[in-house]
Image 1: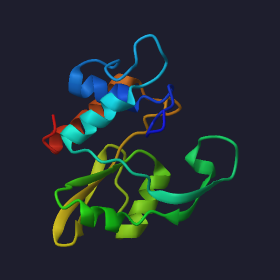
Image 2 (image 1 turned 180 degrees about the horizontal axis):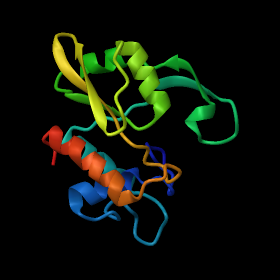
Image 3 (image 1 turned 30 degrees about the vertical axis):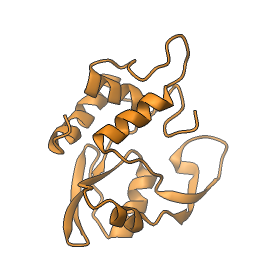
Image 4 (image 1 turned 45 degrees about the vertical axis):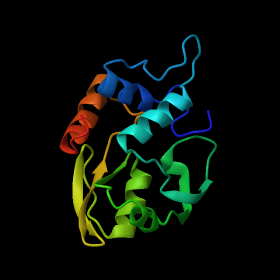
Length: 159
């Protein structure tokens, strides 16, 4: 799948399905180990959720998916993106590398996992949420991760 969180072993779309539809398999293509991109895009557009990478250019220092071995070569200009999204209330990151990158860009204190740090951008108050990784390598059961994400979505009045 040419989209965000495509790996079958990543639980992001299961978390979202569980929280918004009460079904962790909501975005799964029946009979396949894959997520339905069209259903995801429609849902995200309907709910006003935007996705983007915090880096436009990276270098993998080892042949694995760990952020620990990821070098950010060119950070994404998130300010430019937020400028185009005047109704945006919050930015959420799911990894330490993404959190480090955004905290540096906005001179924001690092939030603890499951919490947020408020910051000002162009005269509006936003929140930077540091969410638990949706990777199964992050040792937290799906239901516990969902509880953390539920709090964020409830805080933002999306659930």
